[in-house]
Image 1 (cartoon, rainbow, N blue to C red):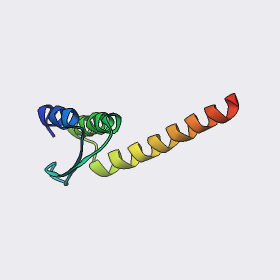
Image 2: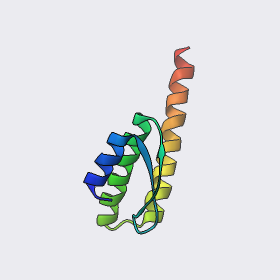
Image 3: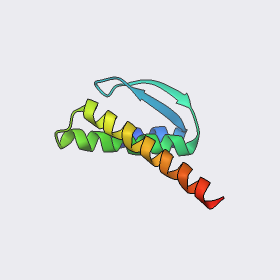
Image 4: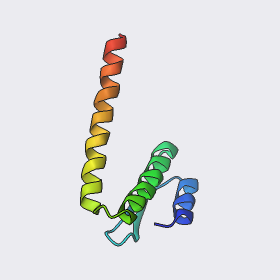
Length: 81
């Protein structure tokens, strides 16, 4: 995904779904926060692929890191109450 396309999607507030070749296959209206996070994630994935990581290991690492972060946030909220 090139950065210009990502910026356009962010400005339009669209969720971008891409196929394995990086082609935009759908766009669904969504929150600005989610759109910006998704664009940042796709840019990070592209950079990691250029460093030689496979899309599968990137996806798994992202899922694991996201889950860990949600658990961390949940634990912080529980301990402050």
